[in-house]
Amino acid sequence: MAQVTKVNIRNLPEEEFFYGHKACPGCGGSLAVRLAMKVLGSRTLTAVPANCMSAVSFYYPVMNFTNNGLAGTFPGTASILTGIEAGAKSLGWEDCPVVGFAGDGGTADIGLQALSGAIDRNDHIIYVCYDNEAYMNTGIQESSLTPYGMKTTTSPAGNNIHGCQTHKKNMFEIVAAHGIAYAATASVGYPQDFMNKIAKAKANPGTSYIHVMAPCPTGWGVPMNETISIAKKAVDAGLWYLAEYENGEFKLNRDPKTFIPVGDYLLKQSRFKHLDENDLKIIEAEREKVWKRIRTKW
Ligand SMILES: Cc1ncc(C[n+]2csc(CCOP(=O)(O)OP(=O)(O)O)c2C)c(N)n1
Ligand code: SF4
Ligand SMILES: [Mg+2]
Image 1 (cartoon, rainbow, N blue to C red):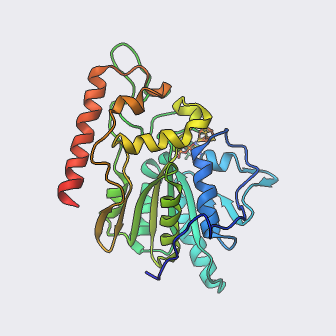
Image 2 (spheres, helix red, strand yellow):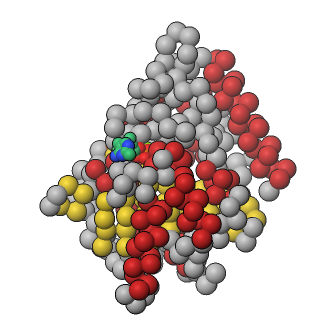
């Protein structure tokens, strides 16, 4: 991979490429798109499938990307990116990063097959999954990245069943298992880390996948001015981690050593407020399992 200049507050472009959109105040997804676009720049070719980010920024005749962009089908992100990259190449366009911003549902559920194919071909594309842990655009339904215990409209919290009954699918390790050229996890709570990973993806001549945790105040039930602090708390509680996969190796970027209690993160959010002691123990046990694997195998 080419040498990558570190992104910092001094060299970050002031120019914006994603603004004026209709996302809810405090939307983590729109912040992720905005920060990524600052690093990728004006020559970027952007595709956004059906999700909140396309709903808030492509409403005819308005488009809130100032670069070249299109709204695509829900399952099609990776195949659309493949087509854009091939088209740009055939037109002789150079230095045009090709990026997609898909949600958790559009990535881990309906878009997984196209993503797997693109990674297998090592297409020169950047796939960003902004993870708000549910299908938000259609009214907060469960996806396979919805965490255990989260209340959604399809996994309600009642007396017997307390929200989602499965743990998050591990997309990062799924794409790594393909032998992808570059993959990373990130969080809008750590914007500099996220932007540096986007910069690495920009320099990578093969497929890059970046999975960014992007809180949704509306679906999570947190105040709109707590997006960043709640994103940080997920990492502090060990329920999200910042890592990279490069040259066939995993690397942890942040190792908290000790975690804050999971309740300090979860019980601040109305999507989890029904959880009891037993639920918290189940979530803690899963956390221990994940971290044991990371610490012994990476
Ligand atoms: C084939 C198909 N099925 C269903 C839909 C309806 N739909 C549009 S957006 C969406 C949810 C997207 O969820 P996610 O990818 O997590 O993005 P978010 O809305 O959370 O930003 C669904 C189900 C669709 N557009 N196309
Ligand atoms: S519902 Fe959530 S993800 Fe969608 S625009 Fe609002 S805050 Fe962002
Ligand atoms: Mg989502």
